[in-house]
Image (cartoon, rainbow, N blue to C red; front, top):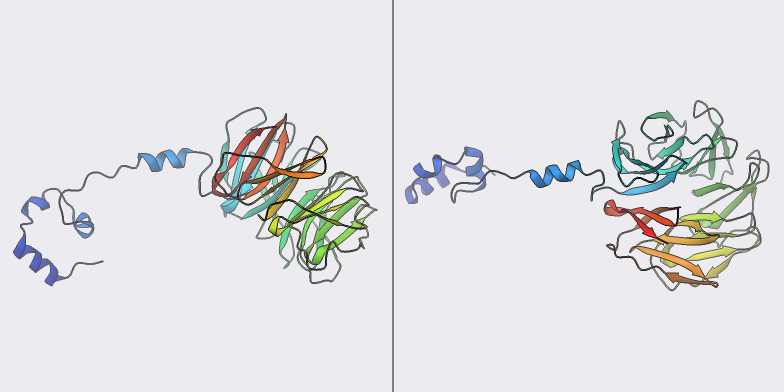
Length: 327
């Protein structure tokens, strides 16, 4: 705030500025008139900027191939490392897109989905990226690669988009329902499930040529994601620690008791068993049909993504959390 002439005159009447003028610039006077200001120490700031992972990072997705592991998040964040290495390398993509999901394709390249309706293609080491626009006005939430290499993205108005030429052209399919699709997963070259708002479940048995609507999970349920371990068995997770399970190919769904009320965001698999990730550093494992929490010594942040590599669980989420836990 500028200092008024009246204030300065009054100040001069009470104190001598002669000594202060020898060590304070006018900018420092605006901050403090009490005495000489020490030089600003930026070493802590510089150290933070040198770190590949920062507390301001909000990581939304993880993926890996045989060579590399990748994490993506806000403001164009791409963190990548060689598998087996502890050192992460940081990239920030041009335009700082909000990256909300990532998948690995059969050719081991990576595809990431931007909130701005862009597809980002990464090489096998995740060091080089290029963008391709997805021609839609719908909001997109999830991306995957089918076994034949076709890229799929899903989003609002029950819309699915597919590209068989690395994002150069796109085909669109919609159920014409005002519902957000939140996940898509291919189990084989032909069979895939997609799920979304209002408990919507759809399935294809012909590689996405046609999609059929199945019975809903629950009328008002909003699945954050759904994961199928095979064509018959799957889990859908959402808010308030809610988990629904199917054992008959999405013909019916049963509510599981998790014992937690934290929102759940992700399902991954370890040794044929699901692991659930959520808010407040929640990780749930399933033992003999019961969900049990995995104790972690980390702040109570949201965990948005995870993957398993050589008996280690890699977790990522809010406030720059990116860590490995032995299983």
